[in-house]
Image (cartoon, rainbow, N blue to C red; front, side, top):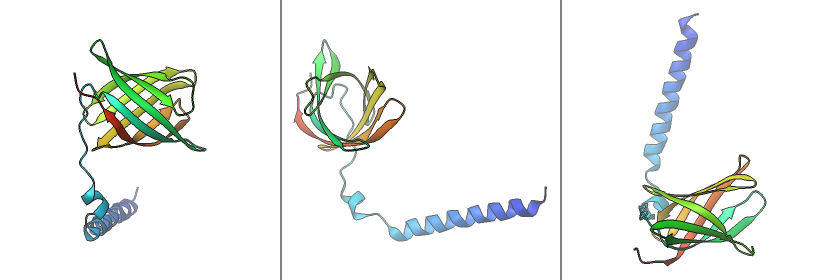
Length: 145
């Protein structure tokens, strides 16, 4: 193997890295990121009510999420607006992530949320095929036990 092709590849990678750093430095911080609230750490028992909007492949779906306490353990009820039934979810707090999960007939469902003040953002996954963005707001914050 000749060293010339390897040197050309390494040289091109170095040029791309320098160009990307230069462009990032020239753009400076965006006004949106400078004005955004810092990510909030979730309480171990993030009790309250939240209004979520999930970006499904064909439409947006709104759902109410209620997290309550059951014998010292947080439990969640995920209730899509217009549905007759809510769905129970397991709750786990991992630093700045609120992780909600359940087994469904369509496969595992997971919802990972981050909080900035009263604004929520994150991702959901249903089975192995469907996933998307989630946004939301805190509608009622319960007092911590």
